[in-house]
Length: 380
Image 1 (tube, one colour):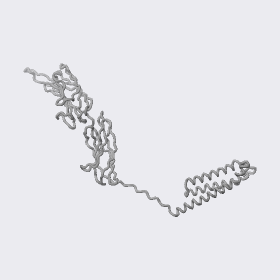
Image 2: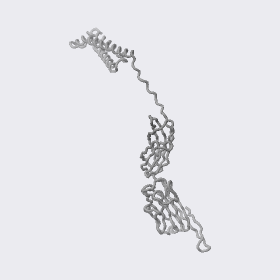
Image 3: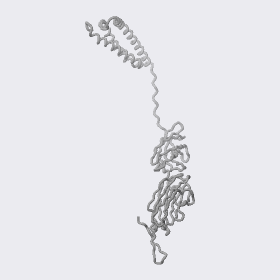
Image 4: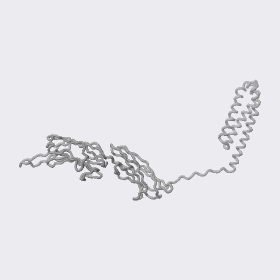
């Protein structure tokens, strides 16, 4: 970097002296402003006339939202520190905010490093801060530097959507709010404040403690209830309050309470008519009569074959009563058909039971005929 200089008149008439202005050749910082936080500010100064030519070094830190460079020092918003060869580092107006510090010790050097630790007060307000560095030499040549430092925030609040419902005499509002924490390091617990207003009147308010990770955003879904009129316009306001009560600029969303269109109620159940009831009762009675007849016929038909099987071999009985098993198979098929025909008038369990019973009897009759009928002297 080329050093700047100025030409001044020397004490001896006819001579001129070149004065090199001080230059800030490097700087860095670490930390953020907030209650009891620490900020480290390091910088390097070069002066072609040696560092002995420096008159003072001043560092001013101030809150960019609630203070300015020219404001008075305060614990919340403004600190000033000065270095001179005779006094070293010291704080202006206030005390207790100057931490560990370092400065060059050899005035014959042309380049030196300064280090300053700023101890924030417990009342220090986080947010958008600035560090102002001013270097002045003995010939009133000055150089300055201003850098911006973020505090806890800033937070961005965006109302994504608002849905309204009218329930009896109350209005229900469901809103989706996105909160972004643009601080790359700190993520304290903050309060999300949601309000519904009618011009200047607050109709409903909800405060919720949230935590948004540093450098990220989060979406929150909240519900509020208030007494509102259908067709009237209201405003939803949302903002974030940090641990020291500093609020972000409020986000607003205007909405109208609407009456939702309800789905038509389902039609009432149709009461059974007299004809339907008569048909149902007739079908059930007829089915029970047929079922009873089927059971009696099956018992009568199977009596003689069963008594034969007790005394003789199964094959002989099948050969003797082959026609009986054929009739039994046919009756089983008839029973299956009737259980299917009368199923609309019966309970599902009764229909299934009758169907399964007829099917089992049919398989039993068929099994006897197939397995043993072929062994008869005269085929069945």
